[in-house]
Length: 92
Image (cartoon, rainbow, N blue to C red):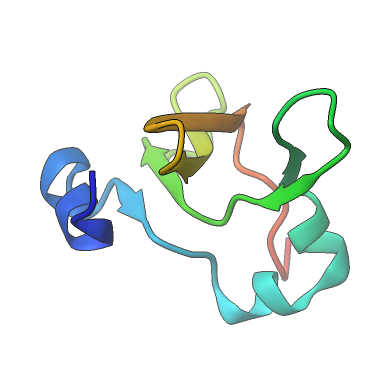
C-alpha cells in the first residue's frame, strides 16, 4: 500500500509500468488534459493520471492498450481513468 512506484514496477513489470509521462506531455496543456479525469465521479474534481500501464507496443490498436490510473491511498484502491488506444503524444 505504501511502497510506491518501485513496488509497482515489481508487480506490473519494468517495461509495462510508467510512473509518469514524458516532460513534453506533462508540460502540454492539451496532452495533459487528455490524461486528466474526474475523480471521484460526480464531484467535478480533476485528477491527472500520468501513471500508466503499457500493454503491447504495436501500431495495431487491436494489440496495444494503455491504462491510465491513480492510486487513491485513502480508499486503498486503484482508479482507472482511461483504458484504450495510446493517447496522443508530441510528434504524432
